[in-house]
Image 1: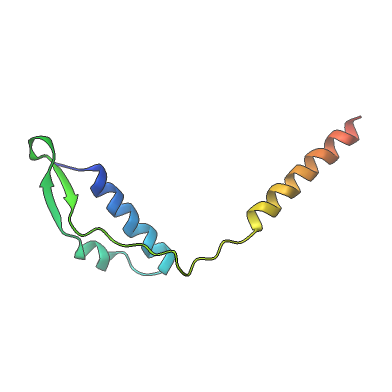
Image 2: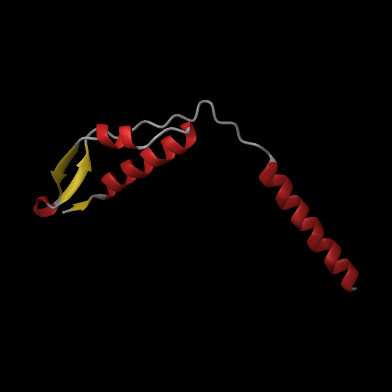
Length: 82
């Protein structure tokens, strides 16, 4: 018996939720309910997948500034070569 794609996705969502909320993963895994499904009843699905909310997540501009800085250093290197 294997996890279905849906089951694997549900476990990945539990992991993401726990990382974002900095909490223990074990209680959420214990709350999950599994059901046999799929061709020849050989896959497990999760009947109560977690809900992940991004309401309190802020996106910083650090990635953009890093990209801009690396592009500047590339330009500096090419102008030194000339």
